[in-house]
Amino acid sequence: MKSQQYLDRKRNLLPVYREHCHVCNRPTSVCLCELIQPFDTHTRFVILMHPKEAHKQKSGTGRLCHLALKNSRLHVGIDFTYDSKVRALIEEPEYTSVLLFPGPQAVNLSNDGYRSLTGHQGKLQVFVVDGTWPLAGKILRLSKNIQALPTVSFTPRQPSNFKFKKQPQAEYLSTIESIQLLLELGQEQGIETVGKNIEQLPKVFERLVQIQLQGDGSQSSGENGA
Image (cartoon, rainbow, N blue to C red):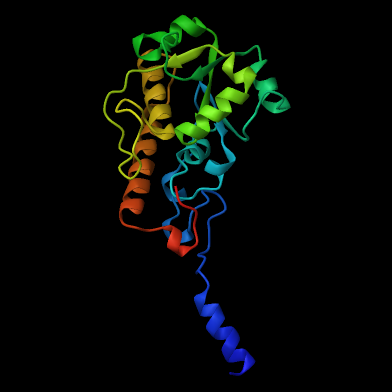
């Protein structure tokens, strides 16, 4: 067999990698950027993303939230104890820093909790751990500064729409659904003024779920699994 024929044959056995959007980190054929119009929020969201989650294209709802919210920060890592940027955020006097994590000591933001945490002038900074529950648990175990933050929670209004990814418990939501609900609660309690801007979050998430259920962006096309 001639060398060129041999190379062509081998090349055909390799997985096909599609072009990616460098903004939403998805294949250009299923890019979600046209659905995102970044908007301001009074609350700052700090998304702590596990490296394994950062390399996923299949779900990545934390990344989509960061793209949509101007007042957000995204940091990739496992142990943030000595992360200078994360420590600086926690120490900002303008914000009251909290960790979104359910538990008996958590302040339920569904019960007019925003006011109880910030008063009338303060701003809330919510740290959100983004990753599968085992990965998120590892971040919390190692990151002593994140562990030390007061915790907040919410009461879900409906089950998660994450149809291709099972949540550990019925009341658990994806990152994008959680942030959407917090913004809704903030608006209802007079903290946020996001208006109709918030409507794009469920639209982006619905499109993401639709893409995955249709089988687009699968691992067979060279992407990481979720």
